[in-house]
Image 1 (cartoon, one colour):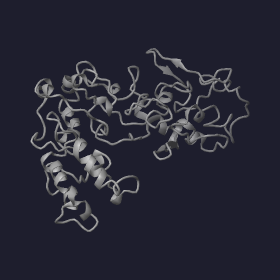
Image 2 (cartoon, one colour):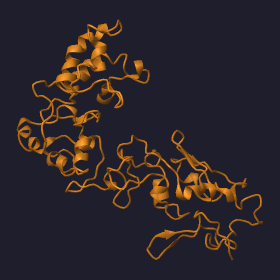
Image 3 (cartoon, helix red, strand yellow):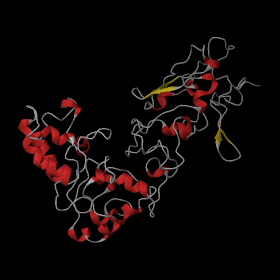
Image 4 (cartoon, one colour):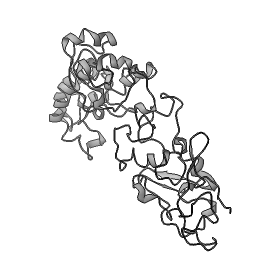
Length: 367
């Protein structure tokens, strides 16, 4: 939402766009962030309220930051008692803010009369880009059961702008059907799978957190196991608008379960280091608890193929306690898991799904 720009022509303002939804705000008070407040705050406020060391942790360098957090907004549409206004009100400002109190009148016109409008246009004044406002565009789409046809009427079937010249894809990376309907792949993944790449930011590089090793797990690209279901790591929503899905902030929550917790493993994921630990799939669990020959049991999500290889999760063979054997001569005892060359066996079941006895929660021993 930081880069949206452009103003609709007057002819469009009275044509298709005005028919699509009601106008927001009061056109008599066109004070807006882009045209008025951003330049004002750049000269009056940003010297103290910018960067990682911003005073009181409050930044005025972008629209969303100037509004304040959703849990405690400092600029509330239509509210003259908003914290932002009280702080720079000439009648109330402390010694630090008295020098910038000249910004009060313009700020009040923006907050109270302009309803913290992002851009001065008679089509989307007010809260269309304000997450704290009932008219926030996500709320409007939610009311349509996550159908984007309302937006497509003006911004085009691909939401890149059409006659408005204003692209929704500046901030989003959406792939919406011609009728506005959505699927999981509308926001992330592809037509083949909802798993990234692409992630919700449009990234496709596996070194980014939103992409990482999704394909290695969900599709099983490394061919060392059957594909891992999405629900092993995430709560999978029944619908796009299900609780805990779009209403949660990024990054996505990781709740390891199912095969990750097999054989009494206690899996966990560290969002700071982007690494998992205690995961059955990477060698943790009761059967391998005493194995000391493994090489890597805390793989990094963005580390690529270097994070999972023969010997990373368990010794070749595991030690101590395992009968004497020399890799790749494993198939004599594990014939359904390893072939004569030491490669992991993957097969396809009657439904066409790839299966494997490797990393399935049960030790395969047989002759």
